Image (cartoon, rainbow, N blue to C red; front, side, top):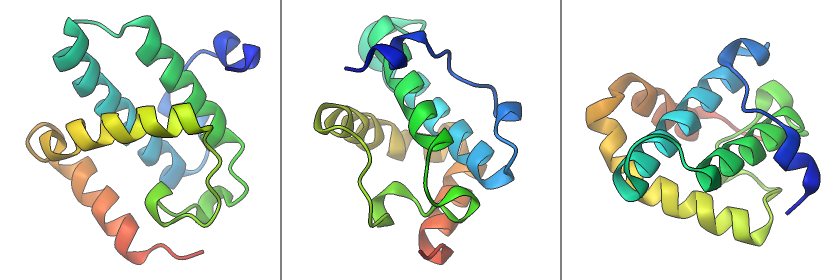
Length: 118
């Protein structure tokens, strides 16, 4: 893991100037919180905080910017293998639960996946 990722604190949505990226950040943040709460018990553990820092870094440096597709439809897989497996586990677990806990974010994410193109 990069030493840079340890130094970065996860952003608030106001740090992303683009509404689309800010919404994507809120979606990932909600998923990680749901996953960590249910799997690790309580507040964010250090592993999940590091994952959020890594996701933040990847979002900030995305080559597609505001035209970024959802990760599942992206032609460039910019996550390291370990982090990709980690975020897949988070999304597999938290995705269905997002429908109940954060329905609007779920709907927006679903629509982004259908309508965004690279």
